[in-house]
Image (cartoon, one colour):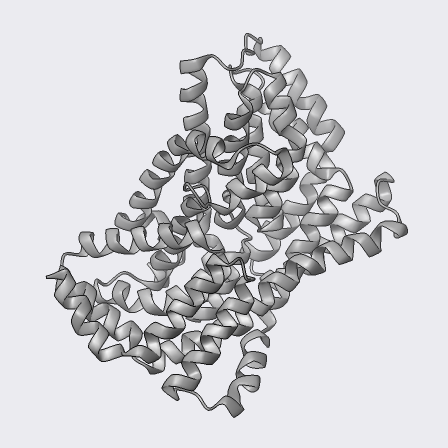
Length: 443
């Protein structure tokens, strides 16, 4: 039945859909940059279908990135870079280690916690994987963890970069679906923390089973003393996430304004403690510009592609095809999750959101899933894809900074995928998890 449905759908769409998709897949396989592959597919689809006059493509590209909310993206990227260069990320690690030092496997748990702390500022999973990996992987190995497992632990923890607000991914999906970004940030708090806890739990279970790391056996007095000393030494690092969260969730600052305040605050702290100099700015700005230069072209070229797909009726056709296979909500939700994880496995978050959100959202609406729950489910499922073998993005990041085999890291990441998938299913089937903190109008 499913094959017949797909055949019927092929007749409706025709080659003006399939040829650009095939070209896109070929270009990605040949390691062509994602933005160029998307741009080529979009132009080809527009030419073949006539969905949008080519004379309007330039205007469409500009309008795609001409949004105030997108200004927050480079600001949070720059904040994360300043955080590393000023040494404030090391203060987060010291506090996280002091919190978890009482337990066996404490440094592994500290690694996951510092990933979450970094996520609460930078909004990027790849940046978190690189920054935290450089600080912790060698120490994890010295503590008794096998290097492939240490890499997998960091890769899993870094997925919180797009799951814990502020998140670049939520900014983009808010832009695509027309949802208030501050509301999305609030909705993402509980799901993001659940993912963080699932990674912590996985590490605890594995460490108990294999006895990778000792530690623990501290009295409450010793633990409290360690925690107090680390907080006293690095309390100022927590000013930055405090400013971001208070500004956004109190309604005093938009996400963009919070990003600007966070940049200024982080730079000011760096100068005050003497770890940042004016000579650091050129390299810091260039580094952040390179990351931003990858994201914005993808958004610019993805939006015309999404418009062409909408004009051609692809979202409606997808809904018809999916509901003809099954009209059971739980089956359709599972179908969406599998699509998102597979997409997150082979492509970055930004193009996945811009292309897939308009296609999948009508299907979510057909089973009465609201836009908030759908957005949280989508971002979480894409996050799982980042450590899903064999092509998860975070696996490549930690492999690049350590030289460890991707296949070895991927094998050690499987337990984390399993536990994160459980949380993803909970988010998909229990709306309360995404809406518990929201005003009543959104529930």
